[in-house]
Length: 130
Image 1 (tube, rainbow, N blue to C red):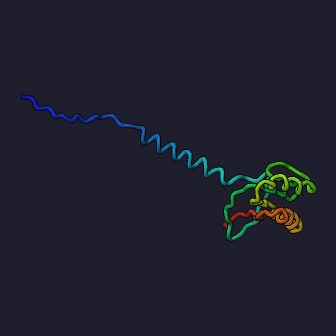
Image 2 (image 1 turned 60 degrees about the vertical axis):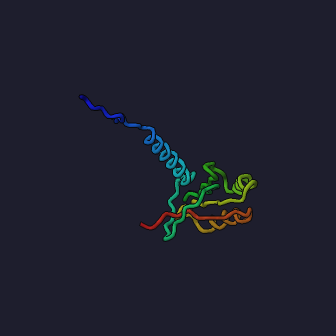
Image 3 (image 1 turned 90 degrees about the vertical axis):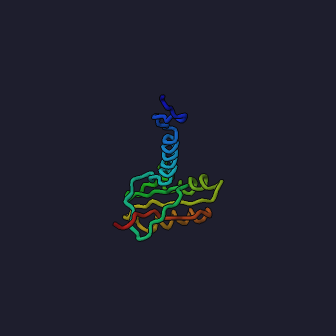
């Protein structure tokens, strides 16, 4: 007499839960990678002890050759106020300054003053100490 069990165990493995996890991880990394965006021009940032990460809505870059860029678009020194005005007219946000460490402070103060006059929060991008 042969006895058979009513519950049969399947040897197959369901991959649906693993693909859900992989999909969620992919979405997470895609979203977090967009929080840190590089500036428009290559600049050698100064170092600081506290380096906070801020959502970059508008970036202003100044190289040591005194080339200006607003959100990856190269502009002249006289066009900065116009460019910032058009970018900040709808919302009051953050302006992140990516300024080379060899640039004189007067340029930093000038651009920061323009952004502050447009009621934007001004932040200076730095790199942390090593």
